[in-house]
Amino acid sequence: MKKQSLNIIIRLKKGRIMKEYRTLINSGNDEFTEKRSRFIGYACPVASEKEALDFISGIKSKHWDAKHNVYAYCLREGNICRYSDDGEPSGTAGMPVLGVIQKSSLTDCAIVVTRYFGGILLGGGGLVRAYSHAASLGIAAAGIVTMRMCVICRLSCDYNQYGRVSALIPERGGSVSDSSFGENVTITFSMTREGLSLFEPVLADATGGSVRAEILGEEFFPVKDES
Image (cartoon, rainbow, N blue to C red; front, side, top):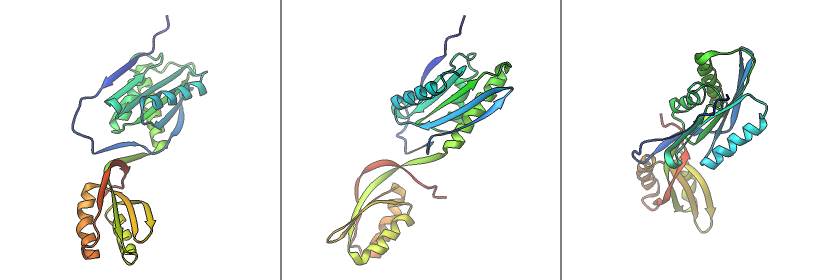
């Protein structure tokens, strides 16, 4: 009798509002062979459960002839983590892949590990190690980025102030998204609240207090480590 795939949802405990999270930069994949079984780890950033399921479906369609397409994903949306062993013995495939995601402190990402069976049984411990390794390879190929909650700001300055003001923004860890040149120069940029608190007095000093930043909203952006 064929074993049914384990398909479990884990809801994470509610906590404080997330100020930052780690996710994948791009999609990536890598593979290795263990005792003639070919393991391919695919990793992809996703923003919703639909995106995660579409990614998983795409890999399954690509590798329709594979023995197993094990997956796991974690999302900020609904604080959900989900995994499937896809026919492997319970606890030897999907949960190890999920464990790699959690140990890497990643969210908004999905991983599929495709296995082409090579005819040699790996045993429970061997499967755990193989699926964990393939998941790690996929993550390494995709790359990791830290997303931090930033304020979106706008300021207006004279043309003779523009060069100094635009240089101050990246000095405080900010990123300019738009510059509009009219009667004055209007700059839209993102920056952490901590960075903004350091930016404001420097901006005031550089412009004699004539330029102030207006906060428009908040959004997650990739931010370089301040260390």
